[in-house]
Length: 243
Image 1 (tube, one colour):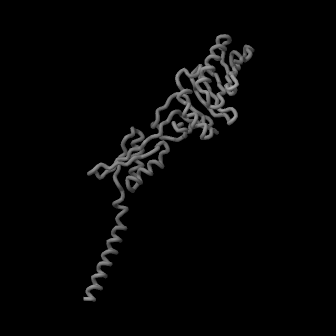
Image 2 (cartoon, one colour):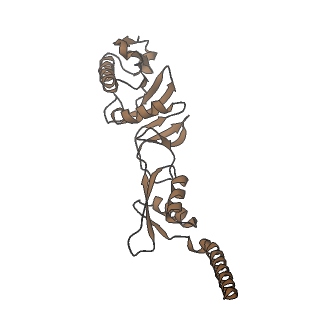
Image 3 (tube, rainbow, N blue to C red):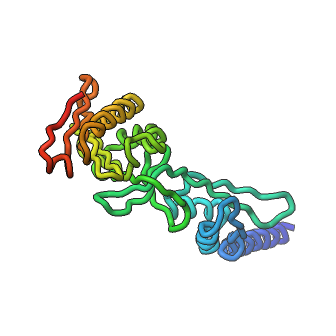
């Protein structure tokens, strides 16, 4: 009986070791979970599906790889319907509010949270003014994202806004308009009030003199909107005005 017990224990141990070795040999073949990307349009869906298919892991690992690969993805959800062997992966795209430049070169997009991120071609279809964010601290970009809807609204400036560029901590931002007007905007505050006063000052100046002007709103808190004639008005020797 004792001998039989020893043999039984040895056999059980051998079987357990064999089962453990078999389990260790299986993951590479069995852990590759099938997953389908949904909830986003082409061409991004195809790009995301290629990344998902290239990851030989679980749906969760595929989702993590997708988030790491594309900075335009803010989150990824994974869903498994009852009775289906394939998981559904749904990327959540960041919301882009403006084209972003850096020293005049494409740098991606400005997000509604103030982040600047890249995205494959065709993911976002934005038109309108761009933002040159070179040198701008994160705090300024967050404020800009909050104020962008007012700054980029049709008719907000005396002429269409073409570009808003960061200059420095002292000078803030500079706006460039489609008619050649430049506006030293200063800090991103008093947005609606600045826009209203600028339009009134420009309308008054253009009623008296033709040509383009350079505006300076850096001293707006002191009640000043400075206008300096440029272009045709400068050539005619017109003096600047102060409102």
